[in-house]
Image 1 (cartoon, rainbow, N blue to C red):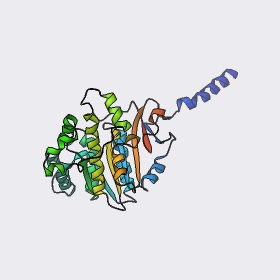
Image 2 (cartoon, one colour):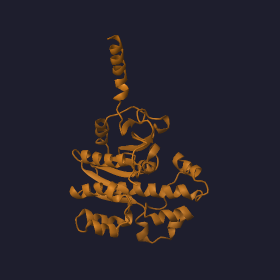
Image 3 (tube, rainbow, N blue to C red):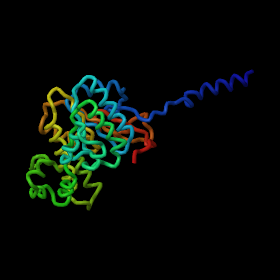
Image 4 (spheres, rainbow, N blue to C red):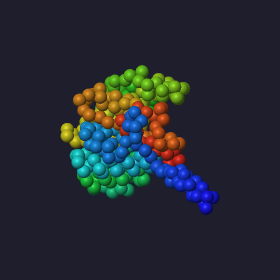
Amino acid sequence: MKTVLIFLVSIVAMLPVLAQDKPAYVLYSAKGKKVTYKKMLEELQKQDVVLFGEFHNNPISHWLQLEVTTDCRQTRDLVLGAEMFERDNQEALTLYLQGQISGKQLDSAVRLWRNYNTDYAPLVNFAREYSLPFVATNIPRRYASMVARGGFEALDTLSDESKSWIAPLPVAYDAELPGYKKMLEMMPGHGGENLPKAQAIKDATMAYFILQYYKPGSLFIHYNGAYHSDNYEGILWYLKKARPDLRYVTISTVSQKNVNSLLDENKGKADFIICVDENMTTTY
């Protein structure tokens, strides 16, 4: 009997280990404190602009983007926008949202990302279903490439129509921002000082068109790669420079082996941080 009791006690002691939760993701505040989805949503709904930083191939990012957008629509008028659509594609995107062209025609007219069908079509179709504006905020990539090769000056040769798809020139630029400096350190020899300038023209253009389409009293949710808004730089730097009076909140996505505590290196990246298990499957 004593042996049986010892065995049972051993099994009971092991139950917490055997029954440990294995979450796919955990939400954290900037300081690394766990927060609930409800708490994050309540905070997002108080803002004017949300910058939702994603990993482009992370399904948790994309799922939460749609969940957040769906839930925010219950209480706020929304304007949506995304890095994944370039300004010269706005006309075709709008036609699709209005039901004037099909998904197949949109695919032919717009430079869609390869993971569009799985990751971004749900957001676009949500906007279409509820008649929400969806803004193509990014600079046409060919113009960003011009900056990577020849600096901001290369854009001076563009036509007025082409310049209308970019933030007004000249754009402000701070080469000392940590994100731009880090880019130079990580990719030496790849365009030199023009590489972060190419990033900056994207950030400046996205910020400019967010503000062009922002409607007072509405909530603008913008979907972008996390590196465009991490550490309160990038797009947010330009937004605050132009409209410091608006309320902004940022979301970032990080990947860790253990999601149950946020690594120091990931703290402070955003107001809310989605910590995803590094074994999470990807969409491409």
